[in-house]
Image 1 (tube, rainbow, N blue to C red):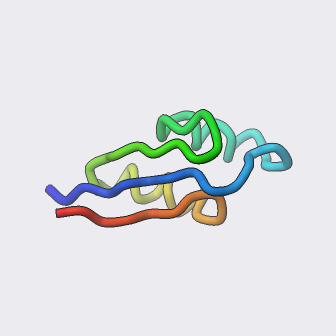
Image 2 (image 1 turned 180 degrees about the vertical axis):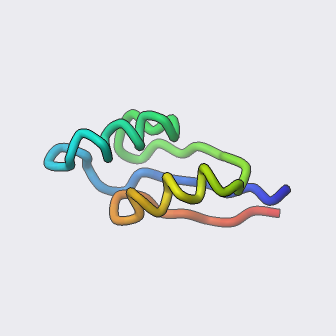
Length: 60
């Protein structure tokens, strides 16, 4: 299965609570933090919800 690397690049300060919880569910707690996930539909849906706060790279 393909992997993706998700990095938080913008602050969550003025975001709605649902977006803050989505970042927390992805494992992102602070600015600049990087996590790696499998690229399944649940993770991709969460990334799409907070796409303005994160950057995503695909790995092999």
